[in-house]
Image 1 (tube, rainbow, N blue to C red):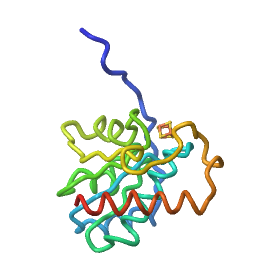
Image 2 (cartoon, rainbow, N blue to C red; image 1 turned 180 degrees about the horizontal axis):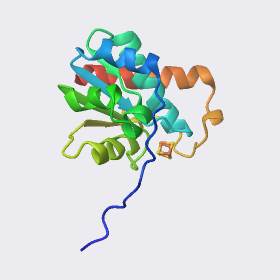
Image 3 (tube, protein in one colour; image 1 turned 30 degrees about the vertical axis):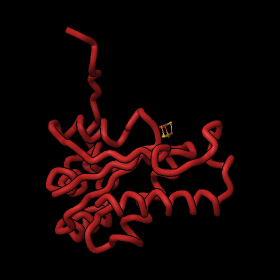
Image 4 (cartoon, rainbow, N blue to C red; image 1 turned 120 degrees about the horizontal axis):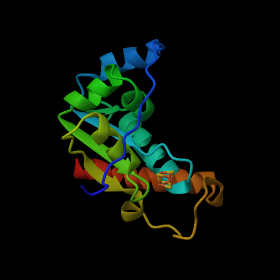
Length: 153
Ligand code: SF4
């Protein structure tokens, strides 16, 4: 059998975040759920900022912003947002496509609509870390990416 998957064991926890659960309950009626790489590099940061801008500023009535860590590590309200979404959107920073692959692992059969930040906005491809791009430029690039995603929705 080809070595195409790896098995991970996530330690279960009784701990929870009430605020996160309340948010998930409030957002459950939104038709579009948006997840993103929450990454530590520039591309991941642009994906994160774009997802936030899309959900908070452009389409707040139609979109819910998924907590990727919560949805991946616990089968509670955040995972239900992804499970029950009419449309699930992933904004990724790079081809690793972490949010897409993480959520596919816990919800087999998931088919998110995937957007890649480097395909949405132009920037110097040699840049890697967040600090290599000034904050105002990061924000502008993320807004541009978010507007393009919104246009496709
Ligand atoms: S997954 Fe890709 S985009 Fe996200 S932080 Fe890692 S290298 Fe950056």
